[in-house]
Amino acid sequence: MTKLNQPPKFLRDLLEARSPSGYENEARAVIEKHIKTKSDDYCTDSIGNVFATVNPNGGPSLMMAGHIDELGLIIRYIDENGFLYFDTIGGHDRGLISGRRIDILTENGIVKGVTGKRALHLMTIEERKKVPELHLMWIDIGVNNKKEASKLVKVGDAAVYNHGVDMIRGSIANSRAFDDKAGAYTVMETLRRVATKKQLHARVTSVATAQEEIGVRGATTAAHALNPDVAIAVDVGHATDHPDCDKRKYGDYKLSGGPILCRGPNIHPQVYQRLADVAEDKGIPYQLEAEARPTGTDARAIQITRSGIATGLVAIPLRYMHTPCETMDLADIENTIKLLEGFALSLKKGEFQFNSPM
Image (tube, rainbow, N blue to C red; front, side, top):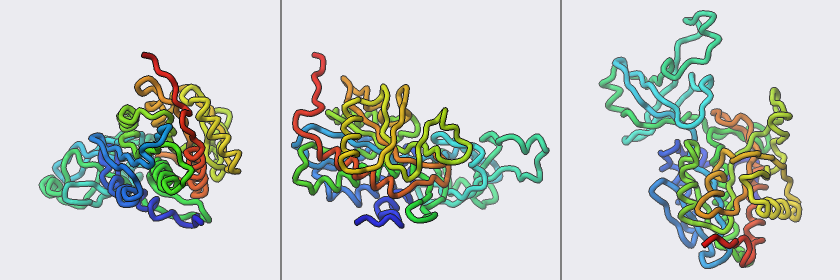
């Protein structure tokens, strides 16, 4: 039985891996360690996606996708005093960047640093009211000049916050990069579990996609390569059960309330219905989300690949998205795995195999 007072080692390893978009090597290594020997086929592609397949001769073909990239920073300038200036990789809240420990990924290993800006005491009253622009923040790596800095760091090196996993209470955990290491773990762990089930008819491929945070790039190429009959993207969704969140605008989603099933134009109705039926049959708690347009997830790209793919979206509730302390209930992750496992095992030959135009 899965214990939920600590993350499983596979998930913890993924969360500790540093993998900003385009620099996902550490996360790929974690997946290889935990999943390659459990797969019938295993490979990576040039953009950085990881593909693991079980029951390769089965049908219909199912693709499950969760992205392994996370937010990051990228070094763009080193000044004469050795301070590093940067741009953001993915959508950051600028007000949260300063005062953070960071790890810079270099060809010679990790370089430690901190993000800095002018201290509050040295600002005018009006300046204190403003969120600083990126060019008014920097990274301090404890050197004296540009020459010293340039021996350690190069323009184009990427960085992530140095915030690891911490348990708050019970099964509630926080970490950077639950978005979307939780989803990548979920689809890979589901693959590991269904691989041993005799009732599996479908060909199942779990994909850890790259570069989602900068435009669902990995999912675009992965879906084109696989061209599955049916697909499910797994990402995080906003838990809105905290102060200062208007549910009339953003919906009502609770941490610990179970996976969120999406409905709307980006979602194939038969895929949604099968997910809901599985949840009902297995007593898995779930929540419903309405999305009126293409979602900000891998589902957006997968749905419109080639002649179209029947696509579903499952979101795991998350508080404080795109911050260094994203907060999640490990029970929601486990319930999402159970839901995907049930979905995969429910598939029978000939299902979701639609006719395409000649």
